[in-house]
Length: 217
Image (cartoon, rainbow, N blue to C red; front, side, top):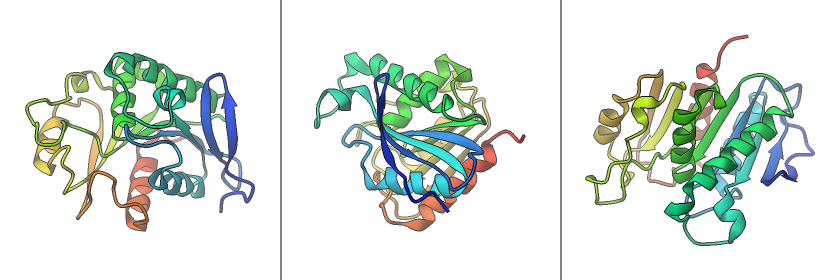
């Protein structure tokens, strides 16, 4: 079980969020962030953080720089590089707290920016967990966000609802054929873009599959 004194606030070196400690010595770490419309207090992120901590991982769920600048509103495309810098800072912060493998995880926009960072810097993490990857804007499949996927060298887990308007299951399968690294797609039956917080099966399936991606000691 996770330690009873978690989560607690962390705000250092521009990293703002909450830290979840496992009950014993961490076997690895997760840096988990939010999508364009939310922040790190989202129920989905809290549930995922608890699930990972129960499996022995130290979890930092954190706000991206655009959300630190303002409490609401979407990110600005021109500032996406700053958000990737924030992901890198979060990765560095959690690595400083524990050894072992690191997972970069994010919902929607946060996951997409994590994949873009990993495509540029393959050693930033040992695995990626992408919750509801936003393959394209709703009803605009021609605006596919796949340019960087052929450069992805990090083992990756994509968790996607089969009713997600940001990408159908077939569109996701086709897009993931571009990824040369080890990857897996979990389809959530009846799942929408928010992955229906409160569904324990989503957390359990995600955590189990993510742990399988990590390098063995």
